[in-house]
Image 1 (cartoon, helix red, strand yellow):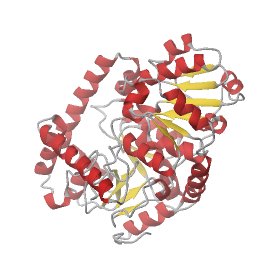
Image 2 (image 1 turned 90 degrees about the horizontal axis):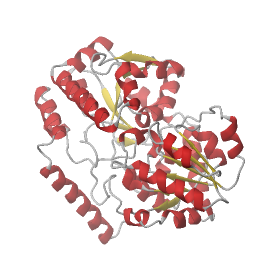
Image 3 (image 1 turned 120 degrees about the horizontal axis):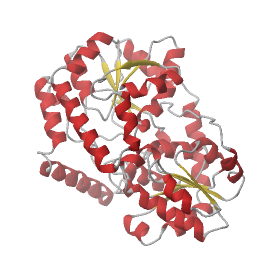
Image 4 (image 1 turned 120 degrees about the vertical axis):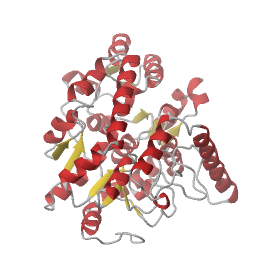
Amino acid sequence: MLREHGHVLPTLKLARALTAAGHRVEYLLTPWWRAFCEAQGLGFRSYLEDIFPAAAESAWARMDQATREADAEQRRDARVRWLLAGGLGEVYRAAAPDLILGDAYDVSIPIVARASGIRVASLSPSCFQGREPGVPPLSSAVAWGTDARARAAAEAEWARLAEARRLAADAWYPRYVEALLRVYAFPRDEFSWEGAIAPDFPRLPQLILCPRAFEFPRELPARCHDDIASLTVVDSPVEPELAELLLRRPLVYCALGSQGLWRPQHHDLLAQVSTLARRRPELAFVIAGDAHSAGALAAAAPGNAKVVAWAPQHAVLRAASAMISVGGLGTIKECLWHAVPLVLVPQFNPYDAQGNAARVQHHGLGEVLTAAEFLHGGIEAALDRALAGRYAAGLGRIQAQLRTVEAGDRGVTLVERLLRGESLLGEDG
């Protein structure tokens, strides 16, 4: 998987279930992740040790933004050179897996696996992001619908994406992908640039770590299989000071997810929520930022707010009456598990958040603010609507369906069929 918590965490439940079923599962990640995988009781295989040593990834949290981004860019470029020189193929051949489950957002995985003669399937930590006629891109806020106007709006969004890609053809990422395709002689008819966020591989079976209930009510491509259990409910210890605040009601929780360090624009949201907490003393607030923002915000926080660099999310959600989020799918699923209404500000997440928010709106699970509404203080009115109970019915319905999915073993069944060499095309598992 990509080296991000939002991509790794949703896979843990499937990895444990496969291990319990007697399979040997290894995560292929950079050295920093070794302790994490071992703490989860999961297999680990290190790679890119020279480019991403554990000390380098640990140091990012202590760097200022410019230094951190420059360092990450240098390491990214070194990884690209390593990939084009055949480094990943050597790793795959040494591991000799029967099956690779590869992050849907990392194009190198299926390209190199095919050249190495290793069976591969795509594993998506998000909703399906490939091109579908009449369905808005996952990166778009356009509402889904079956009427001609809605379908035309969706097609216009895909056209806008295609034009943006044409204009950016000389940027590093398109050049990198095209180089991979050339070096590994990957068939062009098995590759497509028509993905909302990343290129797509239209012949590759895809396991989607998201409940069907959260999707728009439409059929996915036959190669896609959702309803894969992906939620691990962790009961982390709660510090006494935070535990005391969790007893207060109504409680509002605001968290940035795992990307706050790389998206300083998120800090505007934290600052506005902190200001809101001061204005609304009858509400209690837990605000989870990051190592760079939490200290300054905590010093200025009112008595009804607790600012932390990390929060035990499930413990807070059990007590929360609403959550303010940037729209990452992992956080949304955890809110759905606890039936907590959402207030989303998706423009701070440039990838799948807009599409996630469109699905939240479609199913009646919470509020979504536009950039203009956020800029003009609309978050307070949106929070009040979320606290008023208007989303209880939608949340209860999706919660029940999500918990049914999480109790199942569909993921293991599908993976074992792939291991036997069976096709999943057109079958729902």
